[in-house]
Length: 135
Image (cartoon, rainbow, N blue to C red; front, side, top):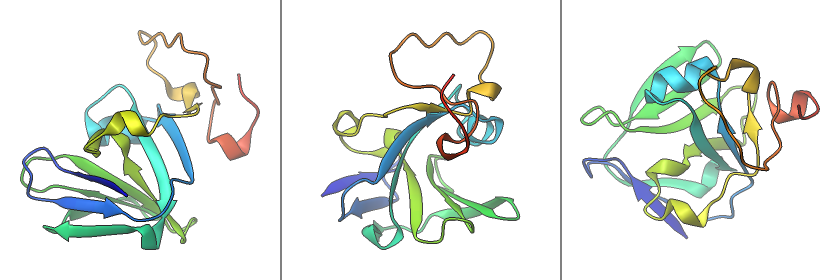
């Protein structure tokens, strides 16, 4: 079981099923929502995520996307899309032990910041992985 929560400790969660996918997202929306140059995500079954304390605030960042975060400290916790009703993405950085879940690729590198130079060996996709071949 994976556990995590926000920076201030007001929100805690646990994940009861295996991680389905992982990525480091470079899209403008994720960067702005997290205030970071990129965001590491893990995808899990929607019914695998359970908030065990606190209730995250919700923000509809576009008509099909809902993001959840801590209203107290601002920690970005989840991303979910109407187009993917069975899964939810959880920020890897909010895990208690983020080193247990390694990203497998980079997505939305077409929106990557010009001054950010990623030199790892992970595949890099200009959009979402499912929409194209790696760079």
